[in-house]
Image 1 (tube, rainbow, N blue to C red):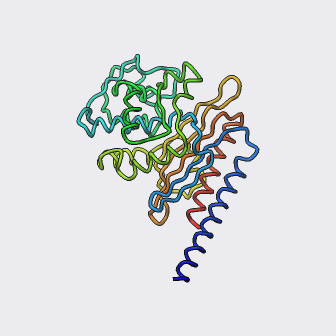
Image 2: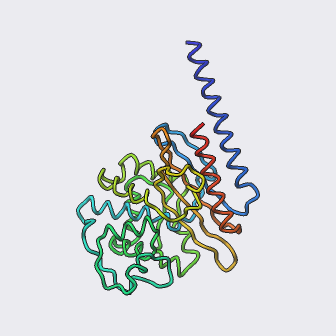
Image 3: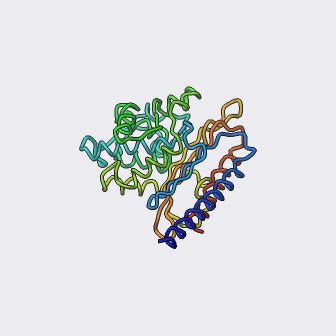
Amino acid sequence: MKKTILLFLLVSVFGFAQQQGLDSKISSIIQGKNATVGVSVLGLENGFKYSKNGDKKLPMQSVFKFHIAAAVLDFVDRGKLSLDQKVALNSSDLHPDTWSPLRDKYPNGGVDVPLSEVIEYTVAKSDNNGCDILLKLLGGTKTVQKFMDSKGVKGFQIKYTEEDMHRDWNAQYKNYSTAVCATEVLKKFYDGKLLSEKSTDYLMNVLLSTSTGMNKLIAQLPKGTPVARKTGASGKNNAGLTGAENEIAIVTLPDGKHYAIAVFVSNSTETQEVNCKMISDISKSVWDYFNK
């Protein structure tokens, strides 16, 4: 009995020392940077938890497209929408002054495309026009908020569309999440507590195909590592301030286990390169921690 207790204490002390080491690394990465950085890590099988500034409400920017896609797929699960149904792309929906690979593919509008295509462009390519088309289908941001509230998601708020955020820099701050909330919602998603098994698998594959933000969470991970992720970025305003440079993800480890990670960089006067390198360095530190 004494040996068992001693072993437990040794393991606990070793685990605490390792976590302190991780915290020291992350602290050194963000030290001296003129930015607010929120970090959360959650082991999806072992319950490991780490956070730094994890309860700060920080702007999501396009990270919220994960939540929007989940709300759309909840409508699919309930038979209100279908992935195969056609969605009209009108020229009035394809705004020219925003990031939109969907508009680049259909520059004149006037076409009907499957809902699945709009979701995939919105999530994997972070299409802003696609995002607002999905919100219109749902009846607005309130529907997304109601869905997340119904799933017990705390520390999340969505009020404004992409178009709203393009018109008003400050609107992004009303679309917020904590880093802890982001990893917790990813765990609910991974555990099948947000959507049906079919919709979970579908959205997971879309997230795995994300092509934006190659210089952030995945930049220093081993090539070929499966990472289901969603990026977000505000760019800089006229004062040189970055409202958000973000990413959330589910990372698959070599042993088949997983962890969720969220890194939100907000109110930064650093360059885009520095902001993204912080995210990349934090991601590498977490990867190294799990692979010791």
